[in-house]
Every structure is written in C-alpha cells, then in structure tokens.
Length: 155
Image (cartoon, rainbow, N blue to C red):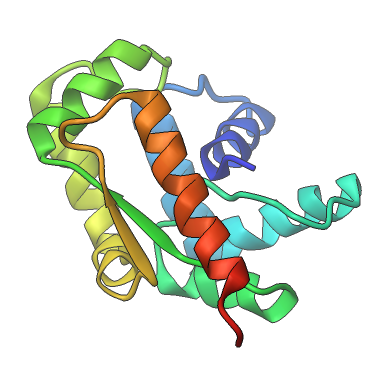
C-alpha cells in the first residue's frame, strides 16, 4: 500500500490534477478535515477491501498514522534514510507527475512533510536503513532481512 496513491486518488476525486502542488494541498486538507491520521484511515479502508493479512505500507508521514495502523495490526516502523541530494535525484529518476520538478520545490515538499510530523516518525522508527549508497536490489534485501529478524524476535 502506497499512502501517496491514496492521496493522488483523493486529489483526482476532488477534480484536481494530481501534481505536486495539488497533492500537497489535498494531503494537508485531509488532515485538517479528518485529523492527523486521515490518510492512514483511508489506507486502512483500502487494505480491508483486499483482505490481506500482511501489508507493507510505504509513505508514513507522522506518528499519528503509525498509531492508527497499530490499532489494527502489529507494526514495524522502518525509516529509509538518504541525504536530500540523493532523495531529490531518486525522485527525478522516478518521474511521477507529483514529484518536485526543481530542488526548490523539493525543499518545500520536505518542509511540508516536516510540518506534518515525518521527523518524529523517523526518530521513533524501530529500524533505520540507509539508501544513500545502495541499489534497489540491495535495499530490498536489507528490508527483507530487517523484517525477517523482526518476525523471529519474541514479543
């Protein structure tokens, strides 16, 4: 489950183009209208429709979202960290409509996400993985190792 997909869907539902500006505004509006866990609530509704028993959620932006997921499931919060330059480069490579087009837009996006609590989620993560000097395959292997270890540790 990609939390950004839920925001892009909601942006389209509201009749807006899902670009960087509009998705950012809709993200903030959802939180203003329905509370800090609004995006997690929408994700949970989508997850429940699938009937899936195990789900990876990408795109946590606040501890309120983590807490909402923890009401329904066992959660391992993993922060994937890289420098701003590396993250901007990865976003440019990805090339989605709502990705920042310039470094200034990227910095604005970072500040918006800091404003909704991403720093706290990163600081309180159960595990941290670096994406600074790695490949997608090595990152996936590292994530699989972290999850595998977590599932084998008694609670």
